[in-house]
Image (cartoon, rainbow, N blue to C red):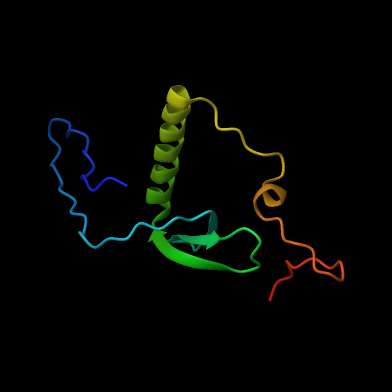
Length: 117
């Protein structure tokens, strides 16, 4: 991962430039699961990591934002995914994501190892 700061877009005339600092000790985490919940005033995004062939995962980050900012994030993600696919090709989703990413090994007695605890 690059240590270089992200280049912000140039402000439009009449807009104030905002500088965002990134802490030098910020640790990037990998998440392959997200849980989304909400209240009337907030959207809560919990990012977790579940490793293959393990029945437990761990939430690594929680982001809380307003519904307005969540919708802006949704639009920004959509635009960036479209840009990515234009450059690198379509991102193809498996037909059954759970089977594709979260297969659990069979126990000797034949029961699945993926029961909730």
